[in-house]
Length: 238
Image (cartoon, rainbow, N blue to C red; front, side):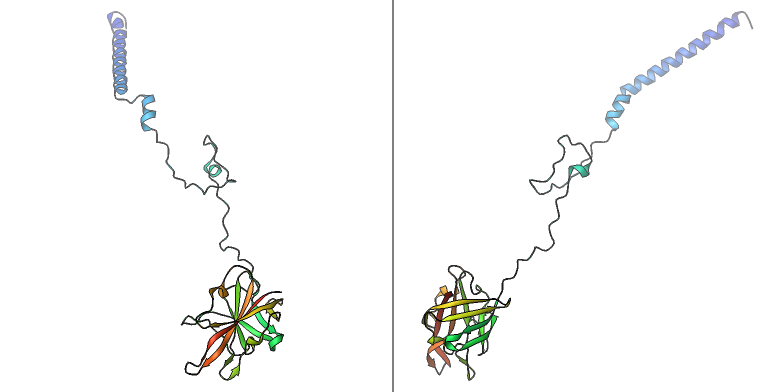
């Protein structure tokens, strides 16, 4: 087709394309005005940095530190310290006394056993033929004053310390232990105290090592069925 019609068609297509361009430009401008541009979209929609609370390990001089720049995976930045043992290692048990020999008064390998305190507060004393070691104090030979006590007589039977009052300075006392070892002590003095006058030093838990051998003595109170005093022989390691 020729003539005027041929001139009209291109003009219409140009006007249509121009109109579409104007609309596109306007629409793009509107988007930019509403803050939906590419750069703004990244800033508004991006997730914030995650906040993960990690407990700090206890301070340790040999503990590795996280890199200063925070680089590396989390496992490399926070390292666990070595686990502590579930049960602390128990110290080796010291030997306890099990036998007592005092040749000077005829005591030969008398049984020694640990004792505590009676409900009334007095030291527990075993039967007539045994010696009690006060287990809340030192062991014989350790620092402080270990206490070994026995009856003079009990229930009509002579006790191990029946003749304790006859000991003299220099007499030997031998203590046997549950590990098969023995330790020798020497009597330094024999003292008589009233029942209420035993000095606290006899139960000391520190100081020079000694063993105090204690029994009853003095006058016998028939009404109370008890002796009025205590006889104490002090011994030192030989």
